[in-house]
Length: 121
Image (cartoon, rainbow, N blue to C red; front, side):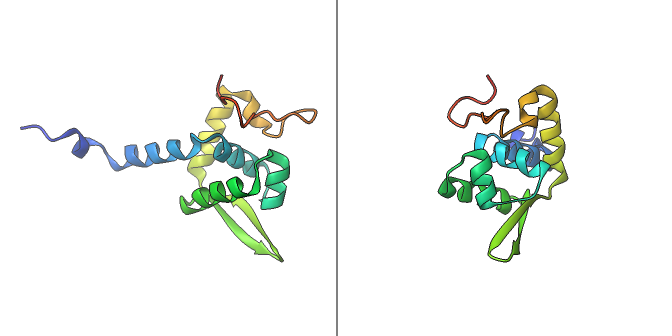
């Protein structure tokens, strides 16, 4: 008798799937792309990416809970940075396929990742 398919899926496949789900959200992907370039506070991310604070806080919490980013308090602000090497490698691979991911804030004041449109058209 063969094992059910669910028992055949190795742990790495499940972990890879979870990581892909995490960056499947355009806001979270934009945050990770930006934080790969520089550490940033919530206010800097809000300004640079154009994501409203409530949404930004929710997405940061999901990334933090997944262990992809971490924040450290500096005075009254929390400064975020990417800490997971797997997400860095994934985004570098995506940048090879989609060059606009290298500049998430866009050129000449226009966002490269329009948050209200499909990201990978």
